[in-house]
Length: 213
Ligand SMILES: Nc1nc2c(ncn2[C@@H]2O[C@H](COP(=O)(O)OP(=O)(O)O)[C@@H](O)[C@H]2O)c(=O)[nH]1
Ligand SMILES: [Mg+2]
Image (cartoon, rainbow, N blue to C red; front, top):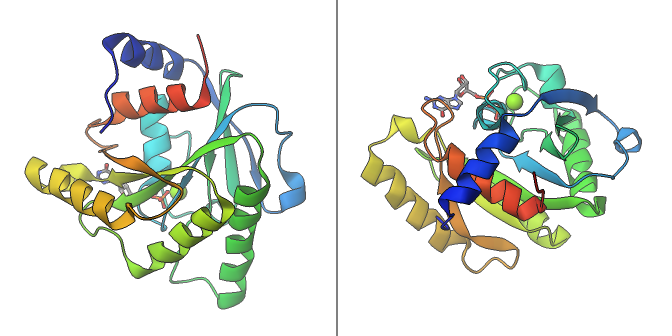
């Protein structure tokens, strides 16, 4: 994990304690909000913990609905953080109950967003720390490399493992993506449930977006 000063971590805490609101869910690429603020996006298989991580970052339990609500999870959901930046919850992949047509439709939506979004600073690709990278994740990694969007792997649900195990999975995962062109050379280990790694991830996002207080 990269290093942050106490000042950076504190500034990020203050920033993420400011009001966060749900702006909109977009089912079509034409509906995206104006690209007038820096954005970071969260991608990963459904159930990996995207919504929980967004909630954990802003310290609100119900901002991004942390559940399998089929409607919402197929949209690109935009959250505003105090008019400074947007957090973007991308459609989950590997969703067993969706038909092939549906899967294509929301994968294309995610892909179109990744390719064309000038204000997108980084994608956080979430991986369950218990499972590590799976075959379905490779497609997402390929799409990110193709779109040349800078991305960082974030391991989720680290509370379900012993500390050493989560860190070991972090190192293993970092090695696995080290040859990928757009992968950022750090893997964050987090638990939305226990708060582990969240202050540092806030600092990371603040640095990446260039937002100042
Ligand atoms: N133990 C634990 N469970 C988590 C954590 N983050 C998410 N979950 C659980 O994993 C499930 C899916 O989380 P959700 O945020 O809805 O995933 P999403 O589909 O990627 O948005 C929910 O039951 C969450 O409570 C975590 O850090 N620790
Ligand atoms: Mg979700």
